[in-house]
Amino acid sequence: MRWPAGVRARRRTEPGARPEYGVGTAVTALVVSLTVSMSFLLWLWAETARRPEPAAAHQPLVQELLPSEGTLVDATTGSPLRRGQVTLLSGNRQSATVQRDGGFRLELAAPTLLRVTAPGYAPRVLAVAPGQDPTIGLVARDAGSLTLRFGGDAMLGRRFYEATASAPAWLAPGSDVRDHEAPLRQIAPLLGDADLTVVNLETSLVDKPYFADSRPHTFNQEKDLVFASDPDTALALKASGVDVVDLGNNHVYDALASGLKSTIASVDAAGLAHFGAGMTLEEAWRPAYVEAHGQRVAFIGCTTITGEQYQDAYVVRPGQGGAASCEPGLLATAVGRAKAQADVVVVMMHGGVEYQNTQDDKIRSLSKVAADAGATVVVNGHPHVIGGITETDGVPVAETMGNLMFDQNLWSTLHSYLLRVDLENGSPVRTSIDPFAISDYAPVPTTGLLADSSARVASGLLFGPMLLDVGGASTLVSAHPPAEPLTGAAGTVASIPPGWWLTPGQREVTPGQDLLYGTGSFEKMDTSPDTEPPVPALWGIGKYTRLTNAAACSGSRGLQLVRKGGSDFDVIATPLHRVPVTPGDHVTLTVDVRKATESAQLEMRWYADLL
Image: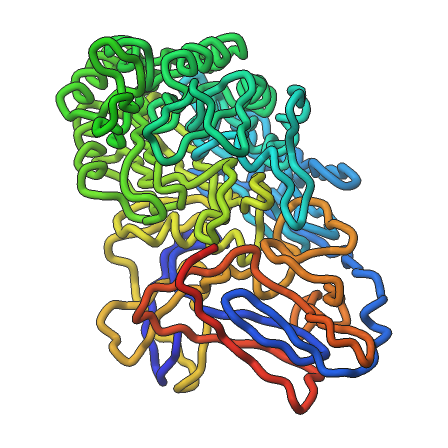
């Protein structure tokens, strides 16, 4: 955001709770520390001056041990919980007992997942960064309580069998279940902290799923893009905490009738409940009924991406199996019948426009149909990017869940979140998200600015009264919040803090968002172990680039672009994929640079495509 003098902003916050994330805008910014010259595009490419490589480049990266002093509270009342346990799920696995004032203290060297428990409350797993002092809200647990987790699109085919520039292939022909579990290892504790976890299984499950060149005859020959995953994918999902899979999508029939039969057999064998597709219309619309914590939950799914222009459509029709096609009458009838037989009804719909973070009118209309018919929660997908979360007459609606585990190489697909809904006696009482990034196609929980980039989309893209909890901190999106003045120097760029958004109508203010999702700070913002040498989240760096403490302009890390005197090799530091911008957009680039040579240049380059 570019500031004039005297800006007014509104803050969204729950009284008594401290917001860690929320809705707002951030500058389009990149922060870089370096010792040599560089060129910046929406890839970052560097060409160095001829100078000796500084000794600092050889110093190991040090992660300082910092205290995190948090507070455990009742998520509804805000009252401190006097009993509880907080346990690290990585590193030294230290734990802390909650004190009588609800406080606890841990020492962290890197972002990590915590498991938080308290007698009489639903457990919670969340990511916390060193130095972060979170207020963690737990929901009371009784006979009428239920916790649901939702993940986005998942597959384990295609590029999972191919090496990338930064990593070897995840899978090979003959890979076993443990190999298929590996991409889910970082996110599994989050998938497993609910009574029921459901994801969209957007793939056929068949033997010999990978093909590099010619398409096997067992796959749809008309469709532009088809893929499949091994049946062990179902077992890997189950082992990682998933209980239910949605098959109502446009890829479940990629391997035609035999592939659909194999998919259903595979998820059945893995013990996964499934819904949204079948060999007949009745099977496709049949809800999955699952018992959890003494309650019966119905799951219903369908897709608006039908492929009916092809001989082998993606959806069920006379004489052919497939996904359920979303039609208002069928949807309302299915929800109404399920409501009469279940305590909770979940509807998941697959549709919209790929890579658009707002849903189309058809999915929005169908979401209202589902809510009016009695759905408890509505969760949508297909665009492969995350969208906002809102509510319709008390029914939480997630417009698009993005990816959980997918092999896409588009920048906009790389930040995502898991959705969690806590219910009491069949009604939602708490909606929360846990942000993550997709690195080398696998999900990794995030903290800091990278997590904030996901949280701002979830809570800020759609306006409406909503209480959104992100990793234990609450943001109340109310219809009429108070406004408070903020000031900043005219012509400067600044970030609006989490939990705030601009009062509309201030023409002298130019709002924007950080197109790099905060990764340009180069701080450690995910829970994965550092590689050797360390690499910033969602960036690639070359042989002559170092991530060091000495290079930091602010915070604890920065990039040094270095090479030995006389060398004419390129020095490379780049976001993993090109960052998309729309023609006509105004882009502000901010760079923190130290010790650059006098001949240093800063360049921005533009490309006509994203690959």
